[in-house]
Length: 90
Image (cartoon, rainbow, N blue to C red):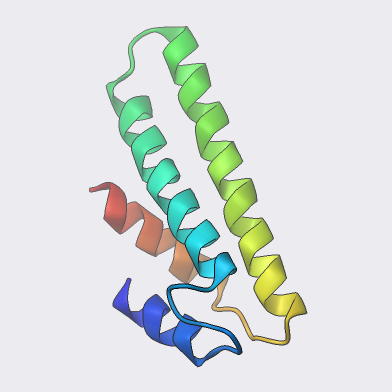
């Protein structure tokens, strides 16, 4: 996570207070929580809800990255962000 804080702080209007960083961080937290719910769920309805939450978090994270790109910044490769989200779920 520290690498992303440094990356975002170098962007115009960056830092942890940047709206796209907050959106990305909140989406990562929601994705991590949904991953735990998915792992612990036994009821098919709960599994489906966890998958829905994970997809919603992925969509918000993608939107935050699009905002970063459109503002002239260069985004990190998608796999790096995905790996960081997985680490936060553990």
